[in-house]
Image 1: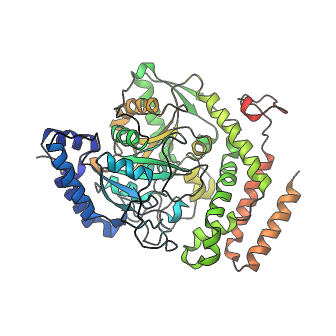
Image 2 (image 1 turned 180 degrees about the horizontal axis):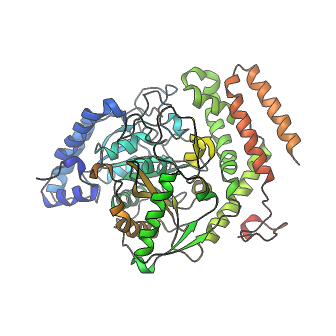
Image 3 (image 1 turned 90 degrees about the horizontal axis):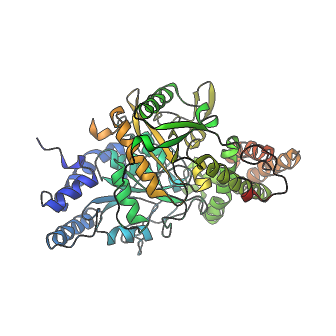
Length: 456
Length: 62
C-alpha cells in the first residue's frame, strides 16, 4: 500500500509532483488534515492559512503542468515560525504583546519561499518572543511533544518541530538565537540547520538579539534542509553530495561538551560515534579552551539587545507578557556595559578557538542536546550529578555557534527510552554547503539508529 | 578582583527592580550576577593553545 502523503519528505514529494504522480493540492490537503486532526493536542500552529495554501497549491499545480518549475520546493507546504512576517497573517511572536492584525509585508525569507513556489500553510507556535527553550511560555498554549504530549518539544521553534515531526508540513522555517532551531529539532528527531551568521537575512523577523539571531529550516532529512537552505540563502539549488566516509575527519568536542550528558544521551552518542568509526570516519578529540565561559558570553551578548527591543513594552504593557519571559527580560535591562564589552572580547576569542579546532578537519561533532525531551513544567533537573535549569542545559551545546557564527546542523542519531537523541555537526565559516555534504554522509551512516518520528 | 563592582550592581538592580514592582525578576538578577563573575574571571588574554597573549588583539590570538 502507498504511504500516506503526509509522510513524504519534501524531496520525494517534489519528485512525484514532477512525475505527475501527485498534486500539490492533494499534498496540501493531507497536511491540513493532519493539522485538523492533531493540533488540538499538540498546539503546533497559531495561525493556519488554509485558504492561501490551497490557492497557492492550485497555482503550483497549474505552473508545473505548464512546464514552469520554480525549483525543489515548488508546490511543497512550508510553515513559518510566528516570528517571521507573512503578508496577510498576524505575527504574534507567541505573545499577547503584539496585535493580532495581519502584517502587510513578507519577511525577506518569506518572499524568497513564495517566489520559489512554496505553499505557505501557516504560522507555528513558539516560546514567547523566542526567549526560551521549552515552548511552554506562549500566549497560545504549550507546544506538546510529537511522541508524548506531556513532554516539551523543545524551543523556541517548538511548533515548527512538531509540525514537521507530525507531517503537518514537510519543512518549517524557524529561528535560532542560542539553539532555537536545533534544540527542538533534536528533541523531536529532526534535522535542524543554523547556517553561518549573515547567510540568511533576518529582515521582517521579530528580533531577540540582532548579533546572534539566525533563520533556518527544520526538516526530516538533510536533503530537505539543503533544499530550503538554498532558497533562504538565495543560492542555486544544490543537493548534498556526501563524501566517502573514509575521507572524513571529524573533531569530537570533549570536556565541557561531554561533561553533562544524561546516561541515555551518552550511550546513544557513543553508539553513533562507534557506527561512524566502523564506517571509516576518522575522529579525533579537540577542545575549546574557554568553553566554561560560553554561557556567560552568550548572556552578555544577548541580554542587552533583547532589553533594548522590549524596553518600551515592558513599561507600557508588562502584564501582557508571560510571567517568566517578562521576569527574564526585566533582568536583561540591568547589565553593565563593561560586561557586554568583555563578552564581545570573549566572542572574538571563542570564534578563534572554534576556527583553530576546525583547522585541519571537515567538521566538529558533539551531541545536539544533553538530555532527552523533558516533561512540561520542569524547571531544574539533575544530570550526571549536576543540578541545573532546563534553560541552561538545553542551550549548553548549541549557543557557542551562535556566538561564533559557524554553521551547525543537528540530525537524529537514535533513541533513548523511546525519545530522540541527536548529533550536531559544525562546519567552517562560509562552507555551509560542505557541512550539508558531510551531514548527508553522517545521516546515511547513523540512519539505522532510528530517530525519525514519522518513520515509526 | 571586580567582585565589588558586581556586588554593588547586584544590590542596585535588586533595589531598583523592587522599587519598580518587578521583584519577581530578582532571582534572575542573581543568576546574571553569577554569569558576570564567570565572565570576569575568564582569562581572555590566552591563545587558543593556552599560551599568553596579553597585549595582542583577540583576532590574532587563534
